Image (cartoon, rainbow, N blue to C red):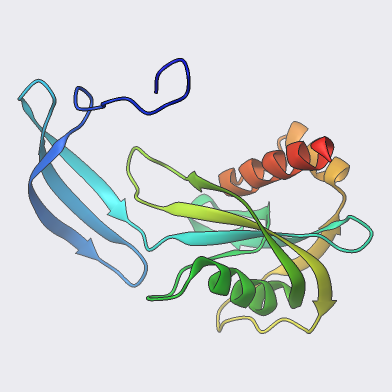
Amino acid sequence: MSDGGEVTDDAHLTETKVSSESVFDGKLLHVRRDIVRLPDGNLATREYVVHPGAVLIVPVLADGRLVVERQYRYPVGQVFVEFPAGKLDPGEAELATAQRELAEEAGYVAATWTPLGRIHSVVGYSSEAIDFYIAEGLTHVGARLDDGEFLEIVTMSVDEMLAALDRGEITDAKTVAALLIYARRRGRR
């Protein structure tokens, strides 16, 4: 980007794939190892996770409280406060995934959906992009959790979530990003 915000030629930064191999193919994640040519002509190795993409939903109740989940996350061995989220199924559009995940996990359907933004969660080693949506006009329909999925649904105000963030109690990156974007947008209204 230049100072004016327009995109400039990034050839001096771009790496070009020379070869690629699969290292691991799992149910959710696939790991690749590529050899790339750097802008200076040298070769380097890039290992990364190929992810199908995901969505996150900021569900807003009529009183302004937000619907969040408490869920144990095995890789880090603790319970996290998170907004409802889930991965894209093959061929599924982002909004359809958001609608499915909100109903399945949190037990709500929404009358209004508003795009909130997109993040790339860990650009150093993953292709994952997460699209954020605000869901409003909520109706409770009851959750339909997947087999082996255990979570607790709670509600928090934006201020309660920001205070929990300040205390280090909310550390899930996608939830932190969505909360801050939502709070900023809400403050501009």
